Length: 107
Image (cartoon, rainbow, N blue to C red; front, side, top):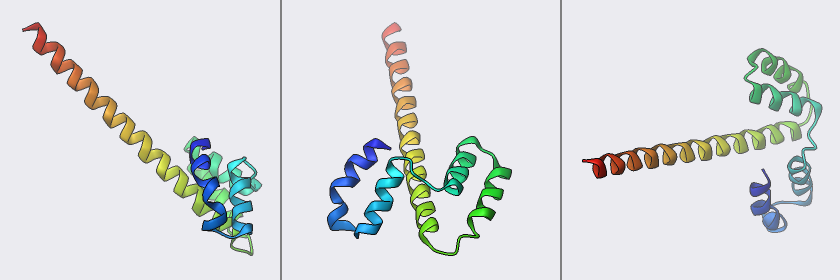
């Protein structure tokens, strides 16, 4: 998260308004609403029942800011999963390459 924030923070003044920048700064420091924490916790723990309940509570919000925050969380989670998947794929390729090189040297 800190890496993402370090890239995002310098762009805030030219990329968004003061209110959005403040929301992003709060999110980067972990200052989410209780409902957002519940949703994030349910996602990270794989608790589908808890996620359903948290989303039901969350949907009772009358304004869009929480939904904007949820969209931001989803974007960060998606990017994180993608990065981890790529790192894993690279690790597997390196392992196979090293294994082939090792086997070739043994013959």
